[in-house]
Amino acid sequence: MSIPVKNPIIFQNIPCTLVTGFLGAGKTTVINQLLATKSNDERWALLINEFGRIGIDGALLASSQDNNDLEQQNIAMREVSGGCICCTSQLPLQIAISRLLNDHHPRRLLIEPTGLAHPRELILQLSAPHWQTALQMNAVITVLSGEQWQQIKYRDHEGFQAHVRDADVLIVNRYDQLSSSEKHTLVEWIAKLNSQVKIIWAVSELTVAETTYSSDKFVANKLVADAYSFTLNDQLNKPSHIIANQRKISITHLHKPMIGLQSQTHCLATVPSSSSSTDETEAQASANSDLPYRYHEEQQDFQLAGWRLPAHYILNADDLQNWLLNLPNWQRIKGVVHTSDGWLQINFNPGSLTIKTIDPQTDSRLEIILQLGNAVDTATEKTETEHDAKASAASINWEDCDRELMAMVI
Image (tube, rainbow, N blue to C red; front, side):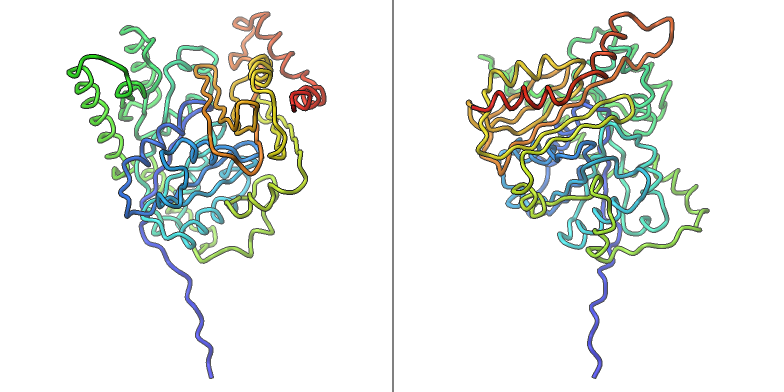
């Protein structure tokens, strides 16, 4: 008697959108805005790639939702931590996408790569022949911070420019302080890098929430916000010209073996721990072992460090904030931490400092990214201050940081 064999599930044309942007550009905000447009009866999947090892972006995203339970919102989320999913091997990317599609059967997939990644590498991977029938690649949505663009260290940084070059749609946010002349210069700068990109000026998060006595003003703000939301959501169904052009090139290179989308659970053991994907179950299991935990490493021109602490460690909230803000040349600080003010979500970049109260977590997580030096690296443009900043970041004593952080535990 023959034993029936379950055939692998073959997925066809699952709409997929990349949301890219440089470190601290505001990708999570845009993803939250996209998720807010989702119909309750539709199941979406979200793949988040973090450059650090701790895994915090998922918690930041979940705690920023009106309903903290993503499962109740019909959203499946998976994180790939410890490096770029597009580097060295396609295996982490294939495993993460395959498991999301097989386990959750989403109607749509959103991918947020790390802000330190070069988007071209991910586009090359998703242009490979074996993805062309499984994923319907829609417009690459890239977030650009006007505040960052004003600074030459970002504007002249190759990684910062790369995100603009490989965008179908550019969401420009945090531009309120730009003059009309600066906005014009920004548009010209964008056009030199990518003349075909569609530019959308984001609506401030305070537009609708703004307290005002004028009902007319409130109505006008809401109309603007609704129009922005509609325009942003509309991009989810626009085809990606960037990826379509790349696929025309990739289709001629069929020497790579075809890799199906059947479940690849057994392949997980082959993934290095530094780039393995984690889900809620895996995170829950690892959260209860080997704590406290800290790592630090250097990637590109950045230093990364992160801590995971047991939930019963309570840190002095004021001391923690002061300590974080006094770290040398920090570019991003994020965390979910048990403090004397309760459980707090921390999300800092040089242009925005956000602290919110959240529900209790299984453990505290904190991650920081320091820039080793200014991205402008020519002899004529370096300043003594920039050299000092680089030396300060490069010489930071992480053991001292550990002791300082532990001294805050009440």
